[in-house]
Image 1: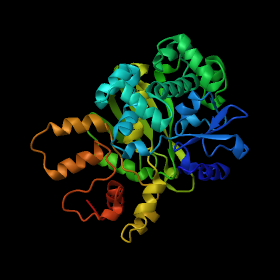
Image 2 (image 1 turned 180 degrees about the vertical axis):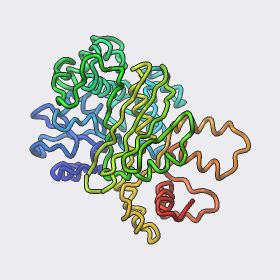
Image 3 (image 1 turned 30 degrees about the vertical axis):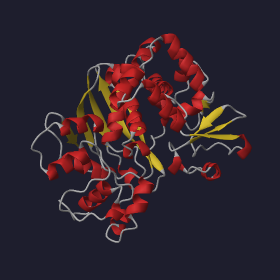
Length: 389
């Protein structure tokens, strides 16, 4: 959707398929929104479009309090792209800029800081600092509205260098103070004072239908003892795993939500709770869970391509929104290259599950080119239907 008139039509129809793919801002109100915002559609002449929330914020717009555009699923484009911009977005989401600065990000990408700044600004309308700032603001909002932590502690946990920087960013992004943002939280979402030890409750948003059962089935089959466990009965299971993070360790628990696989809702979320030894790891932990559960995928694009295949069409119709779970892609790719003696099937399995590569077919399997670039998803459909071990 590169044509602005087409984007405006998506806004007029409140099409949730494009939440996170682009954002729109209203010049008369100074507010930016997701395409599915339920507010009255503004006039076309007053609307501007942005590729990222950071770009909208950089242009002086504040986040809408109704649709909370900062909380939408990320663009599925970054899961597929292996170029510098795609890799940069995954690294920024993992908190690299907060921990290592722009210089650290550039080193990991093999470019100069100036080149990274130029490429991101040209394509996304915002540089790495602005993108990281938008992410810190979202983390701060989550902590303010779901925990009883002191505001000062939240500032540093969200990745801000100072309380003043934290206060200025919250005012710029949400047009209120941190205290006001906390007071605006829905009553059912508010945390009581003294409850941080209970962990941080999260809603991990996704676009489109989500087939939770096959994902939890796969995680249960492949659970690593001592690292992962799944308890409960199908339809009401809880997945838990340990996390090794930059500042410490953690334990994450994600709930299976049976209604997310019905296809009746345009989007939804998975309920989760994260326990961390250091809250500065929250952003990194959330992004790794999102990759593990493939929450930033575009199920509409995947289903459209695979549904055109005669063999896969009935499987896609039976399980719309089937995902391809994966984990720490860039780091795992480097580690894999250094391991001698791996056979092709093992490498294919690692590329799919460890690297989150969306387009992998095991050697010897007839996977036609018409399934590209979603062959990993096609194989998951075959496995879910019992046609592939």
